[in-house]
Amino acid sequence: MAEILCSTGALIGKGNHRDYHILEKLAGKLACDGYEFMMYSSWYGEWERLADDLEGLGLYMPVLHCDKRIGEAVSQGEDVAEESSEAMEKFRVNCALARRIGAKALVLHLWGGMASDQHFDNNMQAYPRLRDVAEGYGLDLLVENVVCNRENPMRHLVRLAEVYPQAHFVWDTKMAAFHQEETLLYREDYAWLWQQGHIRHYHVNDYDGGYMDWGSLHGDVKPIGAGHIDFDAFFQYIHRIGYDGSFTVEATAFNAEGVVDTEMLNGCFARIRAGLNR
Image 1: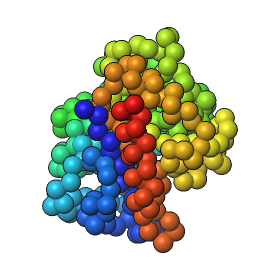
Image 2: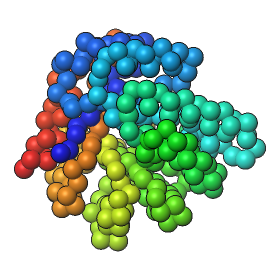
Image 3: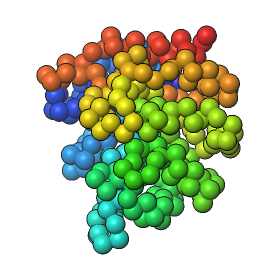
């Protein structure tokens, strides 16, 4: 049966000082099935205490979203091998945290930052090492279709799957829409990506900008219905392929003061359930 998760990144941010303890009081107000825990780079110095506290909450967290700066470091280029080494060490911390909180899957931005996909060969070379580390912790590594500033995410996912047939992915509706790729999965020529089990998870977020509209991308993550993505078509696709795995809502729910709009998030969860149950 499909699981609807809430990203903790939708709840925890600068407005509430990235205080992960708020999960305890918010959990009873959110109608989700569990959480995708978002790791922030500011937590490395206290990650073991973080793990202890999260274990104590007893919340279901089947997915951990890795620190986004890991992929950014991998993307820098061959002249910063030291930074790439540091990225691998930080990745191991992400894996250890994921195992501590009971996660079974890791979401990874394999490329990112200003460098983005401009040195994609580096990202390709790093992928098997990252996957081996993740598998050593009993985790399924899921590469996200992160936005690009040189090529497009679908091209990179296809190349990864062709070179590494066991590669697994998470498909983000917003990221896809940024590149006007949101309907590619519905096409027969890309059906092999789900038929062969490459896509294991979905991020369900809206987008209200145009093609590669960086100004729209860098605002808050939009809830379902706040943009122009055709979610009726998306759920028709989900029904057609018989997918019954997990979905994560990442819509930014906290304001400048850190107050979380649980009603908005519950509306997103309800919209996904309606799409799955029709």
